[in-house]
Length: 293
Image 1: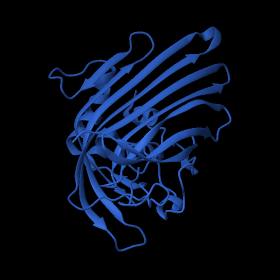
Image 2 (image 1 turned 180 degrees about the vertical axis):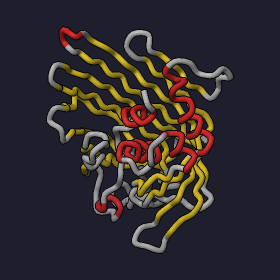
Image 3 (image 1 turned 180 degrees about the horizontal axis):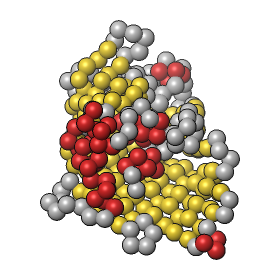
Image 4 (image 1 turned 90 degrees about the vertical axis):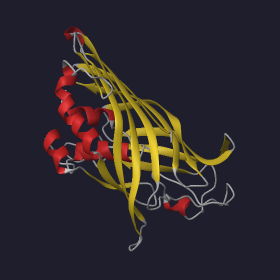
């Protein structure tokens, strides 16, 4: 499995966020607030389990699991335009990817292992090594949305694609923003109360990109988590533009620190069925990001 496919499979998701200090749950103005010199560390885990039923051709299963600890370092803040934009250097300090496919296909890439990876993992190792060694840069605006991920030239050469390619760009945007919701104007202005719902489009349906997916999010107000007030967002629905892909269930929430305006934790689950001629594929995806510094 090529890294391009791996990133695309674990990256069908959306984007990140934060909050103004001292506002009530009804009056909170939510916006991302990174400052130059800020540092943070997030532990992210992703998994995708896929079961294919091809009728008389048989069935098959594959699982991709990924864990990475990534440092965020805010290099600069641009307040010269209409949006406040943070440029953040993201650098993995550890990464583990396990791939299990039909038959005897299996492989583990782990930066903690001294022995070189074998099998499927050996094919992934050069590209993943490059990601871990060089990291990447992302620009995030006050909505928590990624304005673009820039891969170092060495990473692009190793992966064999440009960071502007739709599939790679979508997957990296999701990782770069911790897959948290992009905030609408109603929440940024403080005009929305708890219970407000909005839709986020993930993917523009570009050729080579992940299938276009629309998430429905709900602002659930403010909650105390271990004594700290956080804004809570819930994933309450999703739908693909492609009628051959049917969403079965969604779940999860994102927590944003009211004091710092920075992401604390995000969990999200998506289960869907893809129906094509001669085959039915059931897919289960899970994503979790937790601040650990």
